Image (cartoon, rainbow, N blue to C red; front, side, top):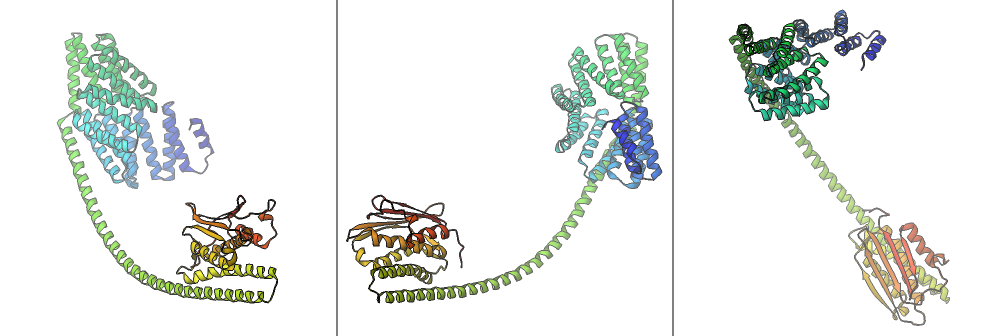
Length: 613
């Protein structure tokens, strides 16, 4: 968000003091590069407001923000003052995340001041809190900072261990900026170990990521380090090219520490190129800026290169003066007491870490044992409940079986009685037809009788079957044919049957309409297809395909229909019954062709109804 937008938003806030503090801190950060004075002004307003409302957390955040501003401005003493005040408040409210970050910032200030033992102490404290709250990014940053201390002290093997640990964590959380910084730092270690190919590989990878992220500070650092590698190869002109590009970026972003470091590097390169006047100019600027920001490591570096410069110019008196200054400040930075403190702090950190891990392991074991006991009791209760449920389920299952068996018995009795009633009706119709001499009445009664018998056969099949919902369609068709041939015994003598019937089962609700359809079509063949004792043949096939479609074909080689006869438009009850049952009850289709006789083709799926028992 732009500064003007933030200022407008701030102007619109009335009673939201916390919101104002947050915006003021954002404004201070946004204004830093444009106007450090404005940045401090906004930060102080945030501090005053947070003090006024008595909000310790916001007060600590404001103090920490002011510390960060002074750190960027390289005013390390003031930065340290505000960070220390923020730290006290974070300790009171015990905000571990902010506490860890503040400890880390104090460590950075002490590193800049070359107080390596104090810096390491704060880094380890920060790391401890970050591990407690499992802040992966914070852990990675602290590990990197500890690595930097060991690098500054010349312990490159130890520095590499911490850098690699940090890189692994950064890669897990996919923190690209952190990954690029670590690749650069590892490359610098390899440079110090004179493994220049590996150094160039890592720093180049780092530079690629930084360019993608447009990380100017990081780009400047990597360019500087590539320049140093070329320096080691003796390519001083190439090294100077990279160093000057790095300096240009550092001046753009106002990185005083980086600018001072670049002045020293460029001064040293001009020394190698025997451009003594240029070397002096850059070294003098570097020393002046290093003194201004109190960067002891850079002051030490300036003194050393100045000493080399005067040796090259054969001014041994001045060379000795600068060498003495170099030795004095080096002793201040790397004294024996400091080294002992650093070793002691790492040992203390590792011991405390092991103790914490042991305590966590012990507590986890206790917690696990409690969970096992609780879970064991839960399982015991669940087992008892499950056993009771199994007993109840068995009882219910037995009752269902009993009820189902009773239902089957009742259904069989119902089917049996229905069949008997239909036989009585059939017998009555037959008896009644005998009192008439009309051939039409005899034919009509025979047709009705055959229809009743077709339905009665379904009841008989179900009564005889173990399965009360399905019947065997193959057997049912065979029984219908026996019945029809018996009814038309005179015609049947001259008509042969050819059957190709597969085992197909259908539900009772499909069987009844299908029986009536087959009765009508086959009876019609016996009645009309072969007049005047004409001999012929009926072919019937039954199949069921992979899509569950039932396919029935009834074909004869009789005289066929009249040329203008259309069965579907016929007014006869028989054909009307056939087409209605196919369409409305079976939801199927029927086709009729009349070439060398009549061929009926029936298709339907037995999925219109549900199983009953």
